[in-house]
Amino acid sequence: MYLFDNPVLQRELLVNLRMTRAFVLLLLYLGLLGLVVFLAWPQERQLDLTTNPLAARRLVNLVFLGQYLLASMMAPSFAAGAITGEKERKSYEMLLASPLRPGAIVLGKLLASLCHLLLLVFASLPIVMLCLPLGGVSLYEALAAYLGLILSVITFGMISLAASSYFRRTSASLVVAYLVILPLALLGVACWMALENQGSLRLMMTVTVLPAACALICIFLFRETAARMLHPPDVGSEGKEVVDLDVEAKEAMGLVIRSDQFPDRLFAPAKRTDLLEDGTNPVYDKEMRSEIFSQGTLMLRVVIQISMLLAIPLMAFFLYAFPDLAPWYISYVIGFNMLVGPVFSAGSVTSERERETLDLLLTTILSPWQILSAKLISGLRVSSVLTMFLLWPLVLAIVMVNTYWTNLPIVLGYIVIVLVVCLTTATIALSCSVMFQKTSISLMTTYLLIVLLFTLPLAVTFFAATFFPDTRVSEIISAASFSSPFAAAFRLPVDTMMPRSQAMPAQWLFFGSFVAFYLVLDAALLATMAWLFNYRWRAG
Image (cartoon, rainbow, N blue to C red; front, side, top):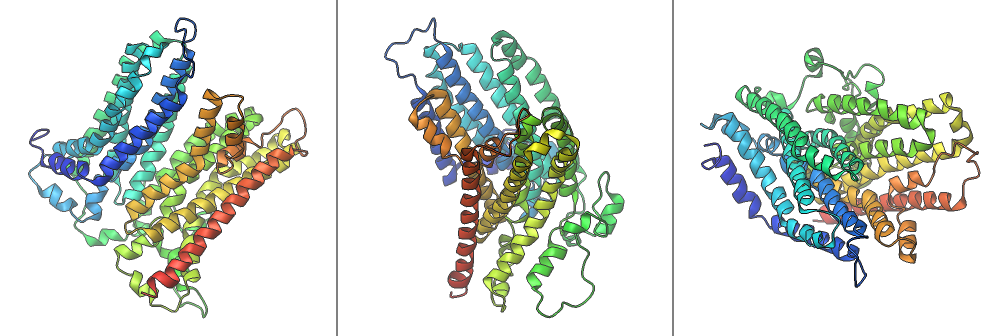
């Protein structure tokens, strides 16, 4: 009943592996991996494998770490909606009423969620094995790397499934899962790179310490998730769809969000008790006052506490101890907004479709711009306030660290970069919400587009600098990476030796290109959404 006769596992596998996207994803994954290996393959006709194994080791490390990061980012997308999807489809009660044991349900969901991802990992093994004859990497190291990759994927899938059991919406579980998994994934990459020159130690750690740590995490989360399904909340009560914030505040542990206190009322204003004034945008007022917390505040409490916990050591190290490393802290703030920003806008329009209220909204006398601006501002304000919680240490550092006194233009540039990122993530999420029918698809497409825009230029630049250094192509790719806010932040370094008021013109040109690119992109997306509202739907 747990494995071979598990109906949950059988049903999920039949549905997931027969979908068209499964074959398309496999094709794209292997095609991209093969293209990377082809471009990075040594160009020499003869290789001295006894004196130059560095090229092969560098190539294998690139392929493995690339797969590791991709798998870490993809694991939540497969597993974070496994249980919340049942809740959203109103089939969770029927699943709990079945004769299946909770452990069998959890195991079936976990294996079904990770089966496709593990298939991608195993399918890439022949491509990696092509690099072994180049030397520099032994077969045991390659197999140990894949063992670590598989164990990490299983652990990240279990974390995502546990998050899915705690929340009622896929978007909430997805954000919390990413917020927990990404630091772990970056820690894994850092440990792998730190032990690069100690192959035997890295091999021993991979086959001993890592399996034990992953087993402990998975067993603990598996037991907790099964216990939650054994004693579920009152899911049959439709009154749970709207949470009483006062009752939740009394029962909540840790951080509590209160609408009548500052700064909570900035993004959680109290409910309106009087009539709307003449000329007030009703969509804006409704979105600002009721929609954000209609499903409770658990996700926000978790996000705020985890982000602040991670921010404390990062800001102490990067902002105060070593001010010249300030772009790394800005990168952390940008990464946080990449995760949190889309959540509050990706369901703005799709939720209207799911509640079947979009047609009613379109029949009102409100203009498309009034509707879109209300949706955009309501989602942007929450993501911006949460992001500003992490940016205020930079303002405090200006007062406490005299290095920033002579680098004020650079600091202002950092703040502008973060603000542009906040606007862009919200705009892209809103545009995906307009395009798609379901919130889950809108959210995942938003994440995909943001990752491509923000991180793909960095990956291409790193690839060109590693395998094609000191070439014209590498210089052109580096100059064209202005769509990445991470690159824009690192192009404005804080100089601890001399004033930076006279920054290099090329640095500010790169910064200006970044700002101009995203302002034009955001304006184009807003214009497209207004056109769709005005002509495609209202005309139909």
